Amino acid sequence: MKKSIYIFLLIVALAACKNQEPVAKGYQGQGKSAVVSTLSKPVQKQWKGIWTFDDEATFFSNDFESGRLNGITSDGNNHFTALITAENTPVNVSPWYAFKVWSKTPKTITIKMTYQDSRSRYYPKISTDGENFKVLDSTNYTALNKGVGDFGIKAAPEFVEIKVKISETSTYITAQELYGSTRVKNWIDSLSTKPFISTYEIGKSKENRAMNLMEVSSKKNKKAVMVISRQHPPEVTGFLAMKSFIETLTGDSQKAQKFRDNYDLFVVPLMNPDGVDNGNWRHNMGGIDLNRDWQDFNQPETRSVRDFLVTKESEGYEFVFGVDFHSTWDDIYYPIDTTITGDKGKIVFDWIANITDRLPQKHTNVKPSTNIKPTMVSRNYFYVNHGMPAIVFELGDNTPRDFLKQKGKVAAEELMDLLDNQD
Image (cartoon, rainbow, N blue to C red):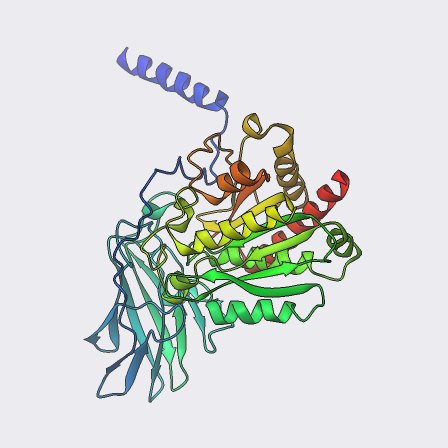
């Protein structure tokens, strides 16, 4: 009798499961951001230099833009342990690392990556010139104490061990591709050879680095699009999509030329130059998450953009669209819900739909927000204070790089079409 009841209950349970709606397995995004103080806090600036081992035959260095290696020890038999720590705490779990290693004689070494109160979020990238990167071959990667789930820091392994062949030529080992302030400036300078593009400083960072802005202008428009990127240093995939987005808007296509006939474009591609060049996990050198400072403006980086927007509006500009490019565990959009923005914000959702229609091969989650005050994050500030429909556009840490480029291009083309229909 008990066995019969058990079988009956099992059949009912299986039938119920069969009739349930499928559970979405994509990344569902983060919750509401906590209100935090953005007054500057102490930052532990890492020592930069060269570590030598094996009677000065093996060398490690973090002494370059975006370098992050807080310590390295030799364990014998060509095995080393790297220590990666954050600029301060508490901090988002984005354990950025970037260092190079070389040897007087060719050999293979093993490096165990360890982190301060974190896990191994970023899959290693390898380069011999600091500009062209490839992912480490999976045969040279071992996860230790594997995580659980599909997304988030709990899904990441606690440690990893990697094997790398080294020689007299330096091998860069990094969390993501390197785009420090010098390389980013070279990129915007290369675009600025076009007669309608200029670049200039709109302020200084905490450590007195330039806050560079790219202006794309026909000198006859008073409508504009605002784009920012890299508030958080490790979020390189967002930058790469933004790079393709801007290159498309400034390209030679008939669509791009028509867009520039009607709209100006303002871009701050590197919102956090100090954090990027110091290899920070999340913060600027004031020890603050810049994307929590769009209410109080305690940090010079956010003040620079605020003052620029206020100045442009005083000159008669109307900002019609704003995009803040970021990276996270998977591709996701964070618009403001149309219950808040009404018809004015519909363009953002039309944009998302059009991008999705053209790129159906990768599902992207959408998480609208109804929380716009305190403004705190850039998207909210853009809308509340400057009336522009705005979005946080997040790309996954491991989104394929060719797809990032394609997505940036498609996003630009769809925005140009939508704005063209509004004229």
